[in-house]
Amino acid sequence: MSSSSLSLMVTTALVLAALCGQSQGAAAPLQVGFYKGKCGSADVEAVVYGVVRAWFATKDNTIAAALLRMQFHDCFVNGCDASILLDGGNNTEKAAIPNLSVRGYELIDAVKAVVEAACPGVVSCADIIVMATRDAVALSEGGRYMVQTGRRDGTISLAKNVDLPIPSVSVSDSIQAFAKKGLTATDMIYLLGGHTVGVTHCSLIRSRLYNFGGTGQADPNMDAALVAALRARCPQNATMVDNTVNLDQNPLSSMVVDNSYYKQIVKKRGILQIDQDLALDPLSRSTVAAIASGFDFNARFGEAMIKLGAVQVLTGKQGQIRRSCRAINKP
Image 1 (tube, rainbow, N blue to C red):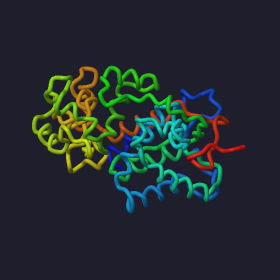
Image 2 (image 1 turned 90 degrees about the vertical axis):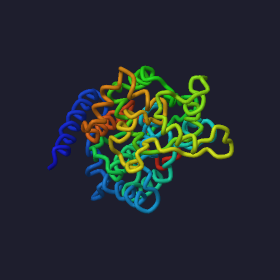
Image 3 (image 1 turned 60 degrees about the vertical axis):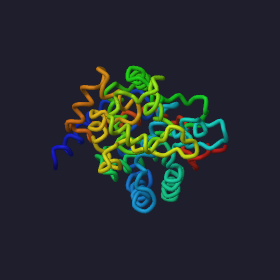
Image 4 (image 1 turned 180 degrees about the horizontal axis):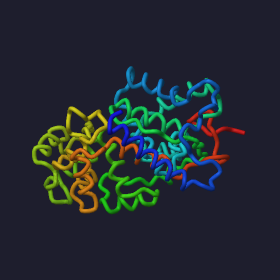
């Protein structure tokens, strides 16, 4: 067993023990292996992994970025209850502006269909999001962390409840937003490491390229060569096309879950303002530098994802197990 694998097992065990301790007194705290023996001979986590692996191999090998974003957007609004999956016109979380570009719903539907065939009414959509995200991270060369399960699904999904940190949020305000969810500044720094995969759009970074802070100039904290490259991809007055830009500017690892994102932001090659500020702000720069220099990102990222997955969960008899991830169960 490699030292990194051993580190992941030990640190994950410590996190889980701490979380379970915090959950004492709850009707049914989250636990590793919650579904063991609940679906006959079917191994729920293996079933989920099989669907995600096939999807990754044949349909979309960028799905890790989509699922990381989905889990974050779900857990930050009313907790990890799969409320982001509910359909319902213009009033649901799915219809809120920050969620219009969230994707991956079809994969969750595919996993739910297979799981329901194996054991109807047992596995929650909230758990499927967490398990599928873990599996997609592993398939994208990230560490495979253990997940807790036992969540139940929420029945409320309102666009007005969606209040997510924006890309230009300051580091201090981001720390406060995460603290409201019981997450530390270090958790925030690692969770933003999810930007090691995925893309953003020119419309979200154009001000950094052409008129940062109303100066009419590029953000002085962005590498000049990167400014030139991005201006070619994101013309100032483009209106018909909103091109995408990799969040990790290392082309060899833009689809790999690793610490490359941190290496890039240390070089002033961060794409979103919050990304670049992480490497410069006194509240975060020492941690960023340590991760960029080779600190055990995979294990620590897994720990942070475990903590994110425990935010305001429904367990026991709370909520429900939806038959369809897109709709609440009718009586």
